[in-house]
Image (cartoon, helix red, strand yellow):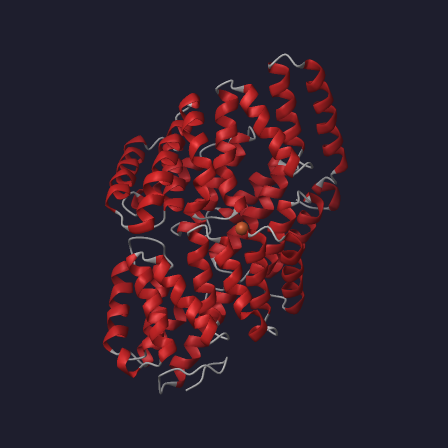
Length: 465
Ligand SMILES: [Fe+2]
């Protein structure tokens, strides 16, 4: 039978085909319908493609929990693979490699599928996901580009290209693709998100706030990752406009709790609380509200980028025993993991983890010294530029609190060079300069901070809340 893209699927069940299409639509459009694939497996338990996508569904939980279910679906798929077609077998190879953490094999299989069956956007997007988690933005962009012509009429293909291009700093092209996809479809949250990244990279705060709030109603049916993540970006824009109260209100209304058990909801919340605190906001007992959901994460070690967030959340909420256990597990995993992944855990995640715990516990000089050497390599554990900025902000905060004003000034000047529009950066720089006795330069910088703030249109003035 054929799916909605005309791709051959080895099944006789119309219901299984329908759920494969529903899974694809949910995955590409970030809706809540992905578990429909389980109905498709029920309708045809021998469908290798349905089983493989079922395994992917559980692996997307990004947790130790769910691995047993993923394994069972992969075993069932492997048992029936003789009746599968070549594309289905390659996808099974990719997801099997994902299960064992062999991401190189996964991405290679997805690239192969993209070359031979370019209308399989689900496979291409899965490949992008793995490349993203390994910090390989070039490969993300290339994968999207390789399927763009064959899917020119599909907004999703342009959204995938937009984010890939943004991550490779091709901002003009990224924004054009993101805006095109957002025009082609009134539900393309990933393309909306890619444009937000472009606006963030350019420090275009007024445009960004208008863009995000204008599109927010279309995110209502999204899964919790996409919903909270687009709101997370929106909150970031407000923080950069010095509207911390709006940022905190967004946290309470749209970030936490939506699906508090989910990895991506958790790291978004942790990252936002940390950023709010660095802006001087009292977050009350919000760390304590997140902490109970992090307890099960201590033994995860699925992705280093996730573990670093969990660790910071546990340490900031005062769960010292759990934080120490997680740190110990990261250390053990850094020794026992294999291949390239081991290097990422040992050389990036572990030193970053130690420094982040130090920051959470107020050991500023230890945090500053620990983060400095690891930051140039932090891209290797995945996350977007905007997400990874958390680590640089923690370094900045640690240097400032350790009274290393000269080093903090250098970093701030670099950040201002890239994005001049953020008043907070200028205020911080003025403060650092004044503390070094450079009162003249501090005065000039303070004027720049006021100018930048005055140039922004306050959100409340536009009727926002
Ligand atoms: Fe993002």
